[in-house]
Each structure stands twice: as C-alpha cells, then as structure tokens.
Image 1: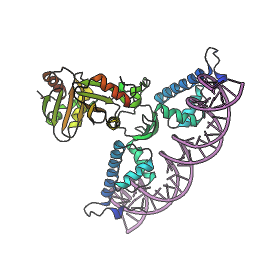
Image 2 (image 1 turned 90 degrees about the vertical axis):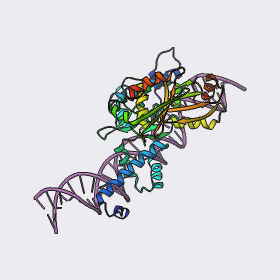
Image 3 (image 1 turned 45 degrees about the vertical axis):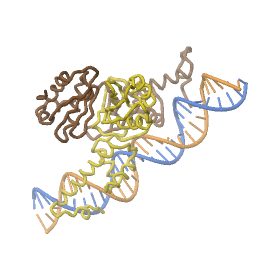
Image 4 (image 1 turned 60 degrees about the horizontal axis):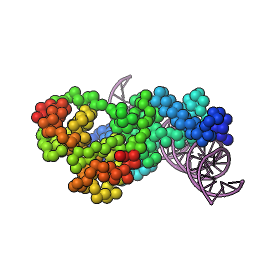
Length: 177
Length: 177
DNA sequence: ATCCGGGTTGAATAAATATTCATTCCGGCA
DNA sequence: TGCCGGAATGAATATTTATTCAACCCGGAT
C-alpha cells in the first residue's frame, strides 16, 4: 500500500511529480542525515528518517543508498558508518607532503621540455609522490600529470613557456631551474 | 586447526614474526587487488587472494577489510565495489550536495586540450577504467591513452580538432562537450 | 614451570543488506 | 476506452557481511 496519494495535496502537481518530489526530498534527507551524524546501519537510518516523516522500508532504503552511492566504511574508531561520495570540489589537499620539501629536492633530478610536454625525472619511486604535490597546487599552467616510477609527464597548457613552468615547479621542487 | 606452523619454514624467524608478516603481506595484497580491479564482494576477493597464495576464510577477510577501512561503495555503473580509504573518493562532507552532472556520473570531471594532447581528469581511481572504455572504441582520432589514478593523457592524431575529440569522448562519457 | 593476556584464526551463526517478485500508479498510445 | 511500459515500492527472500565462540600460539610475569 502506498501513501503518496494522501501525502501530497497540492492540486497543481500531478501525482507523478509528487512522487518524484517525495523521493527526491527523501534522498536529500538521507544525504543530510548521513553527513550530519554517524549512521551505522540501515535500520538506524530508517529511524532517523521516520523522525523527519519519511516512511519507507529497508528495501527502498537500500536502493536509495545505492543510487546515492553512499558507501559503508569504517571510521577511525573501528565503527561502521555510511559516507557520502566526495565532491571533487572538496578534494583533499596535501598537507604533510608539501612541508617536507627538502626530500623533494633530492627526489627530483631533472626537468626537460618538448613542445607542450615537460618530463620530470626523479629518483626511483618518487615520481607519483612529486606528481601528487604538483596536482595539489592546481596550477593553471599544467593540464595534468601522469607519473610512473621515476618519470613524470606533465602536460602544459597552450602557450605556456618552459620558463614559466619552471617557476611553478620551483614552488613544489625547490632547487629546480 | 591453524596452519601457520606448517606454512612458514624459515628457521630464522620466530613464529610470531612469521604470523605478523603473513598478515601484513596479506593486507598489502588486499590493498593491491582492491585498487587494481573491481571487487564486488568478499568471496570474489577471497578467490583473488587464493590465486596469490593466501588461504583464509571470509571471517578473517571481513576483519581485514575493517582494519584497512576498505569501504563498499557503488561505482558509476551501479555496481558494488570495494574502495580504499586512501582515495579521497569517500569521505564525509557536510555541506555539499552531490553535484552530479553527467560528467560526474561517468567518473570524468573535466577535459582540457593543449596542442595534440587532451587531459581528462576523473574521480580518483576511475582513470584507467575510462581510458579502457576509450581504447575499446578504437577511435581513429586518438592514437592512444595513458591513465594514472585520476588523470588520462590522450594523444590526438595529427590535425584532430578539440571539438572533434570532444564529440568522440561524448560517446564514452555522456555529458562531455 | 605455569598461568595469564593479547593476538590471530575458522566454523558457525547472527546481523545486515541486496534482490526478487508482485503490486500499484500513472502516462502514452492505439 | 483499454492495453502496454516504466517507475516506485513493500514483503519475502537470498545474499553478503560481521560477530561470537572456541581454539591455538606465543611472550612475559608470577
């Protein structure tokens, strides 16, 4: 038995729209709750949803979570919690790496240019680490990096001069240039 | 009945060290496998581990995953997969809604061009998957792709315009362009 | 030596979660 | 109008995952 037809009274909305709205707002509520508190399982979440007026079964909730791509993870205290997929806008910023720059000085060996490509050679194993730091700076001059073990390929934006690129790289790899 | 005492023969290691090493290398293997391929459930992971010589039960695997904080999530294609916490893909966010443009849906975040190179940024961990899809299309316009964790470098054939490349990419990444 | 405690594990089981199946509610179309 | 198809949903069920319990191994303290 569905309750939708009783829940939405606005005469200007078709029932389909009402149901959509119902589901959508439920999904919103789920996101809200999951991000606001530690939810360990679906029953718990069901209870929270009930508090806000959403009546649904575990089956539906499971489908909702799948649609929202909510994941079940373990927090620092070994407790299971649901987490939202991270928005790319809030990507993690490297903290510890950037400070220990003297390591990088030893890590990077050379930078060479060809066309719109720069190739950075590093000590074996250091490439992804350094590339990670470069990425986190989000320089407009660099479209992206791709790291192997001891080599980074760095794509420069159109029209960027090697000298400019070197200046940017110097922020990550002191001693370069 | 445990098999540890039969498994490790090196006389220079104490049994405790052996067991630690065993578990540690097993955890390493788990991280490796989980980051390299799409694992949907623990049985699947058990089979992969068996291929590499690790014998353990689902109970132990469950504990390992909890310790590693591996999360079960849903990928862009609605399939359940395990993801490592190291990737910032899953973390707690409080304010932001899931800005799910269709780009985002497919795991791709942006496409930029420079000269004969296109750089595709993706959600962490999605690059090789998307690159794989691009490769499978065997577009004449693309000479090849190279994928890292969240970046794809795509080499365009001579004379191919960004607009053309975008049209091709749109076949793989709905919403591009 | 003997006990105690912490850590690891498997088997069995409990708990949690996903899916199947059936139903309802439309909207579109012949 | 009546029929078809798709979306949403709940109940029941299947599947998956976590935990309980007992056993074992060791190291250190008594």
